[in-house]
Length: 379
Length: 127
Image 1 (tube, helix red, strand yellow):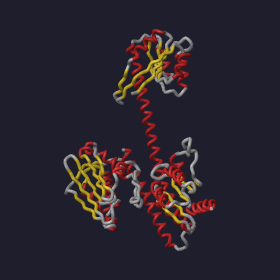
Image 2 (image 1 turned 90 degrees about the horizontal axis):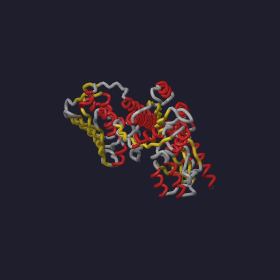
Image 3 (image 1 turned 45 degrees about the vertical axis):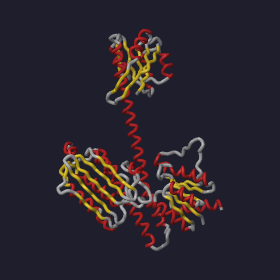
Image 4 (image 1 turned 135 degrees about the vertical axis):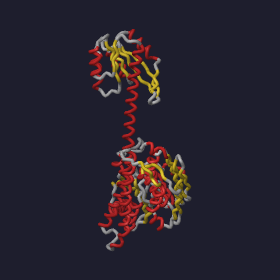
């Protein structure tokens, strides 16, 4: 519920009382933002009282008579427009004086009413101004929130990018100062760590590009028939090396001929992210299962691992930007914290859903549901 | 030779500082979060702690510094920052906490040798 303060300025007592009566019990419902507006009414008889009333409290809509005993509406308008005030002015002009109305609007009045007007005409003008004011303020609020979110995102991003640079810089300084002696081999570990941090940074940059391309909607989506089995097998192939090295078995359960109308790159990202996470966060000698179920309306993908698992609180944070779960068991695992939040953005393009069930030390199952009709409809 | 606690969520920063400080003969305990740091201190209080500001939370290092100081007033604290620029944070505190119980602030990135020099300097002051 918004409350707007109206100030009526007119030297005729009858006018002030009539206007006050017309507006007093008015109530406005704005359908587009589903909000209600109420009004509080004050009055002033001349320029001096107007100034006093404006200093007493906020004014949102000023209903201003053109002719006042000590000044004119236009002079007041000129003074008001010089200040950064968040209010709208409705100018009341004399009968048939179109010139004044045009001048007033040109100098910043939002609207004008020509005397004599009916109570309903006054209410109509105030409703129009109120609506304009509320929507304008809401747009400003949203823009401000957007700037805040963007600032937060960039701040965290800057931190994430500076961390590996600091680490590499520290290691290089150690090498330059021969911190661990003159034997080259003693620096192998330091060099390895630098390479790992550089790889992490590259991953962050490529995940960031994936995420922004999905989010911006600028990316040219190519909706075509996608063979789901091929993409699932490719995702498994990509992690085959690491899985073999760590003795992790991967089982694929994809029905023959499963396909859908989709953007190939998006579906690839889903499979690649889920399968590579299932290997990364697994225990040595563990197991990964990828299962796909295909029905008329939707495609369901489930990727199950026997890894480190997560607590319910950790699961809740998982799909936001940069929300890497940092603990003893994940410290050595490379990740940008953007993969799952990107998947969440992708599945919304298919009117779908991504969710996780997990148990610490037992494993996690990530489930993705994609609706079939959505992508083909947008083709 | 002293017992030193290193608190940082970046394992490489811990590792390089551990190398530099153990070369000077210090005994090192590492903690990757404020929670771990408190556990480590309860088990075996160090003479000096090196704290990162931004770990689980943007400014948790500041809180940790105050908590450690309240429990162990003699413990020297070194704070590694880099945060004021990133988060546009000013060092601003409530009316009753106008100071941080920190002996030394070092701007990140910190050369591990320079950190070791600073640590030795602070320990010498107490000795």
